[in-house]
Image (cartoon, rainbow, N blue to C red; front, side):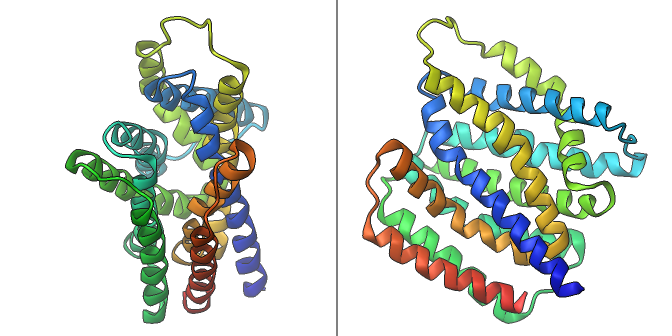
Length: 288
């Protein structure tokens, strides 16, 4: 029975990672028509309204008082903090360099899984996790331009907040359910994100093409809501530290989708690095 639950957790987690991987090409398309700050806030507002509709239609009970603190952490981490800090960081560093830090996200998630959920992975797990993170970071560094202290610090802060939000949301999902957690967290962040949306409204709606609107729709519905339904369920069932290692594959899935959809070149080094990362994820799963 336990093996079955773990298997379901990995399957659900992988689905979440695949959905999140589409965020990169969708965001690249969307920022052709919208500013990064408007895109960050607008997608949270749209997802919050959808989440609220589901909560009402399915007559979900309100979270208890003890759940409000963890929900606030989830909102600060994955709804507000990570999207906003990465948008600000990308004003100082290239997108390729940001992948260096994204490669550290599984480590951050595992660390907070230990601190917040009491998980205890075996020493070999940390070895495979470090090797996987080093592979992603090394690949990204080899294909990135020079960084800046401001951009790098913003990305580090984004990764720490996101890892905390993932671990906190996964632990809370065991009580409330995955889609309920992200829906309530989005609702908590709605006032702040609605204000940001109004502040950064486009000066003119003319000239915003259909691809930009489709990109906004994807990051709002899938990246901000549907992906988290699978992701939190996967972390809750399969283990935060263990399933969190699937995030190592996200940069490569995103780059592959960019190659297929946006006709961007796919280097052989990316394929080789992906193979190493798959082995690291398998090793981490074995010893989590």
